[in-house]
Image 1 (tube, rainbow, N blue to C red):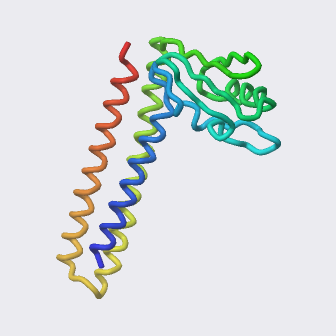
Image 2 (image 1 turned 90 degrees about the horizontal axis):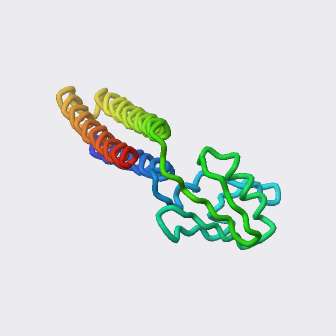
Amino acid sequence: MPQAIKKDAEERMEKALGALKRDLQTLRAGKASAAMLDRVQADYYGTPTPINQMGSVNTPDSRTIIITPWDKTALGAIEKAIMKSDVGLTPANDGTIIRLVVPPLTEERRAELAKSTKKFGEEAKVAIRNIRRDANDDIKKKEKGEISEDESRRHQEDVQKMTDKYVAEVDKILVAKEKEIMEV
């Protein structure tokens, strides 16, 4: 039974890592990326809709993002959503497509993005620690009758080692992302 608890905890920690990676993709690191717009939603006929579901989002070069909406009437809504978002880009609407030019990052914007990176990392670490707590609680419940105290302690140590591994992985991802952001 404790094996199932540990397996579940590891799967959940893996998902927390995946969520961190997805969140970090939305941060702008000086290069244009379609993932930068993943969190931006436009009001489409009264429904908040992700931009990537309203049209094609392409990056023809490292400094430009082009959005070609399938419904031309949605151009204004997409433009408005980008302006309101925290992406920090100004859309240029030519009547058929929206063009976003990604300017080089300023030093203060780089520092701001590095701080956001740390915030995402801390959220991931908290999620991993919460998973550890849940797994340890489940193991302690099993201690009451199904497993011995020594076995319980051994399984809790395994969960702690797993937690340390995933926290180290979060740190490694953050260092790589910060380096990417600070690169001029």
